Amino acid sequence: MRILVCVKRVPAPGAKIVLTPDAQDIDASLLGFAISPHEECAVEEAVRIVEREGGSVTVLTLGPPEAEEQLRAAVAVGATSMVLLPSDIPDWDPVSTSAALVSAIARLEEEQGEPFGLVMFGNESADSGGFQVGIRAARSLGRPMVTGIKGIDAEGDSIAARRETPSGWELYRLPLPAVVGVKEGINLPRYPTLKGRMAARRAPVETMEPVAGSSGQSKVMLMTPPDAGSAVEILGEGPEAVPAIVDIMESLGLV
Amino acid sequence: MSFLYLVEHDRGRIDETTLGGITGARILAESLGAELHAVVIGAGAASAAGGLDAYGAEQVHLVSHPLLTDYGPDAWGESLFQLAGSVGAGAVIATGTDRGNEVMAQVGARADLAMVANCLEIEPDGDDWLMTRVRWGGSLHERARLSAPVKLVTLAPHSTEAAATGQPAAGTVAEFTPELGESDTVTMVVDRVTVSEGITLATAPVVVSGGRGVGSAEAFDIIEELAGLLGGAVGCSRVVTNNGWKNHKFQVGQTGTVVAPDLYVACGISGAIQHWVGMMNAKNVLAINIDRDAPMVTKADWAVIADLHQVVPAISAEITRRRTLAAESG
Figure 1: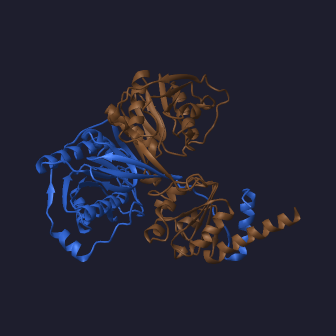
Figure 2: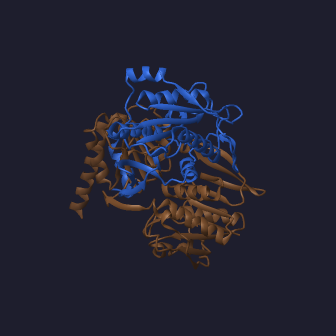
Figure 3: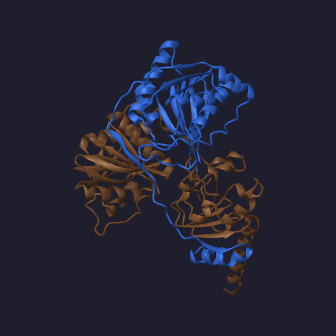
């Protein structure tokens, strides 16, 4: 299957986020960057499907020129080709992001003479969390889309996709070509091998000018949430604290 | 002017975030002089619609169609889009759950309008709305402006406590039948697998969660024992799932499950920001950690600075001892 995965460069999860003085962006000077976690799993899933079924995995990103790092990271774990839509504008809104990706996908499909069987997105980006770029893209492409996917089985000209619910799984069956939004947990992404890294370093990056759009949503500023400021009560430094702990549980009606 | 609020339900069973969500939507509608209407779509709608007037729904739209047999993002999104057009809604609101965000994005794609996800606060600014919304799962907030003829937003889950109004609203019921075709049902749920009917991580009143400090898959036995005694669910941090000690479905955090229990017991969890945002709405937090300076310890309500491998089994033993005593004296 020919698969395209859209990824986003974001500060590595767990990093302490500090804002720039004008509160328009995060201070990236001390941060490491990574592929947004859901999308890292999407890349892994695409590579696994292609290892089983044959085909190719193209990774596509809209981002600063440095996002090439994340594309190469995807190639290092098995993606076959990469496309960068370079832009110095930070924070494209979801409507514009989707428009730029759709226009690139349409161009790639025209060049290659056939559609991607599966286009994959992360469920939401770790940083801006708009929860919609993939859905808008699928609508523009005229393809079915389901988000929150934690399991994919290729079944000829369709896929079976599973979404986790609090009590189990919902199953969807989408005819190809289709689009899915993947969630972390669908797999455990592999680490790149040395050979993979070497190959990624030499692989060519295709670049295309992103097509900008606009919508009614705009960022005014970023803010660090107020600290909860709870004054922790230390109950003890060993098992002698246990009666106090169980007293608290009792007061909450749990014992 | 009317604002529509999408009631999330699964074949008639209302989602736990819905009453808080409709409360937030009602407060917003009131502040902008709009009437709040609740929308309940598809199979089971009538049973999910009961009692919404107590939370301020002036009107309940029951959306039905022979093809609306189950949940599907296209079918629900198309139905909500058509209803919003038919009543001339000024805003369409849902709670920012998996389904809420998904359906609202479908509405946004159809209307070709912006959709702003996971808002915490909204205020008008002329015809625009200014909102504070969640980024990074809640570790960062964004001030955003929305200029659109119809405002499409989701409210961050757990951002408003459910509160019935003193006086129930009119609660009149209107039926709506959208025009749907087979193409709208391609993305419908075709089957389900039920794994557990019991306590779920997302809704458990108590979550006992383990992190790197637990040390191994086997050592989770003591976490499970305590969770079982407290009638709670087991959770874990991202390190634990990345190490393969626990399945991802146990992961609490930005990329896992977001929980808001009465008590969250964090065992050997340092409290990195992506974990914290997944449990910061817990009413009470107890941290068990050997590191006094761990963020989880400093942010908790109570902490024990000790090895969880000693403390957790001792808590279980003490609970059992007290219960046995109570049973004997009772």
